[in-house]
Length: 71
Image 1 (spheres, one colour):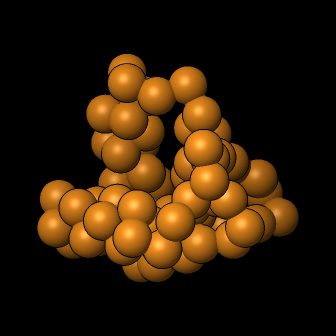
Image 2: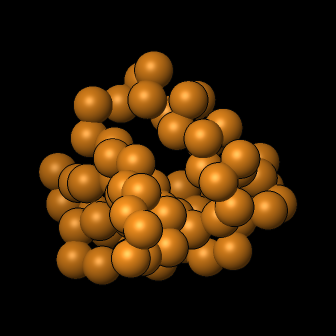
Image 3: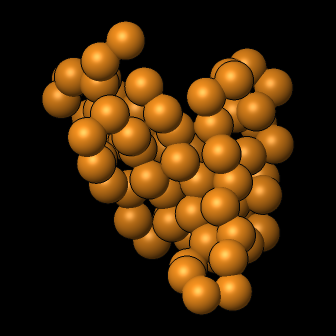
């Protein structure tokens, strides 16, 4: 499935409404990248992971932690 602008905006609006501590949500090709504090990222991951198999929690000492949703 390709990530349309409409789908991206819908997901972005839902996430920002549910998680006000998100610092950014960006679209990169067919990926959505979510950045927030670690507690918020774990909460988002816990909720989304139960219903999705295309989600990754990226935690690296050299980069800001983020969640990536692949489409």
